[in-house]
Length: 565
Image (cartoon, rainbow, N blue to C red):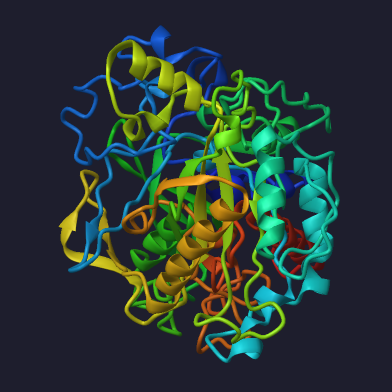
C-alpha cells in the first residue's frame, strides 16, 4: 500500500492549531491534525452548572488522582474536579527547571488545549508594541507593523466575537466589537477613583458573546467560564474551529498522539512528524507536504529542539541559534486587595457573571515618552471582586461563630483586588534547552527551563503596588494588603519568544509569515514567534497571526511553491 501523504500536518489544536486546521481545511487542503491528548467533550468535561457541593470531593479533587503519575503538581484555576477523571491535563510528561528557576508549566492535553478555559481578554497589539525597540532602544522590533496585521485582527475579532467599546488609546487600537460586558457596581466606583489618579478604567476586550454571533448563542452569565463554556458562548476551539474544520470533510484528527520530532528528507526539508501513541507507546510517522507547529509556545520549541539530524544538529531550523532562546512571560501578581466600605452590607449581586475580567486598566505608562518611568514599556491591571462563588476574603475577617458568619456575609459584595500583567523583557539568561540527563515516560528527552524575573518587570510590580495604594485612597476603599511577591513564572500561560520571527535569519527563527528561515515548508502558528508578550494577552493575536500565516500557506499552494499531495 502506498504511504498516505497529506497536504499539511498541524500539530496542536488550541488557539493557533485549531485556527490553522480550520483555515487550511477551508482552503481545500487535506489536513492531518495531531493532538497530544483525548478529544474534549463538553457534555462530560465541562462544569455543566454544577456547584462544588454537588461534587464528591467538594471541589478539592480526589486526593489520589495523581497516584502513579510522573508529574504530580496540580494546575491552579484551569484544572479542577469538574474535569477530573478524563485525564485532560498533562501529568505524564515531566519537565526540568534549571538552577534558580521555578517555572510552572500548566498544560491541557485535550483537544482545544488551554483555550477551553482561557480568560478571554482580547486586545489588539499596536505599533507601540511592534516598534518598541525603535522607541526605547531595547531588543528587536517585530517584522510587521499595525497597518499590515490590522486586517487579520478584524478577521479574528469578527470570527471569535469580541465584546468591548471604542477607547481611542495608543496602547490598544480599537477593533470590531460586540456590545461590552455589563459592568458591576464596583466597576463604576473603581472607575471614578481611577479618574482621580489619571489611570484609565475601561471595558475589557473580552471574547465573550454579549449577543448571538455566527451561530453561537449569547452568554447567559452563569459564571462558570474557566471550567469550559457549556453552550459555546465564548471562543474556544472545541465550539468554533474544530467543528468548522470537520465540516469541510478535509480533516483527519489524531488524538492521544504525542509528537516527538519533525522528520526531514534528504535535503533537510520537513516531510512529516514522528509521534508516540500514548496508549501503545509505539512510535508512528505521518507525512505531509507542509508541517505547521502549533503545540503551544514552549512545546513547539521542545519538538524543534528534539528534531535533530545531520542537517540540523542543534534542532530543526536553528541555524540562527535562537531556537529556545528569548523566553518571555507575563509577570502576574496581586498588587493590592481590600474592600469598598460603601458596599459593605449591601445585598449580594451576581458579580462573577464572566468568571474573569469585565474591565481593565489598559497600559498608561510610557505612552508619550518611552522613558518617563523607571522602567521601559508598560503593564496593564485587571480588577475583580464582589460576590463570587467563594468568599475568598475569609482570611481577612477575625472572629468565629455567628458573628464571623455575619461579617463574611457583610463584606461579600465589597471586596476588590487587582492582577498585574507585566511583560518580561528578552534576556540571554531566560531560555529553554533539552535536559541532557532526563527523558519522560515515553522516552522523549525532557524540556528544561531557565528563567528569572528581570529588573524591568520587577520595577513594574513595585509601581503597580503604589498605584493600588493611590487607587484605594481615591475611591474611598480600605486595603487589606498586597502580594508579597509575584506569582511563579509560567502562571500566566502567556509565554513567548522561543521561536521568534524577524527579518534577519541570523537573529530569528521564522520570517514575518511565521515560515522558518531555514526550512521553507515548516511554519509556526503559536505565541513562540512573538518577540515579547506586550502588556496584552496573547490568544486573540495568536488567532490573527495564524489566520495570516495560513492565508500565506494556501496562497503558496495555489502558486505551486508547495505541491499538493
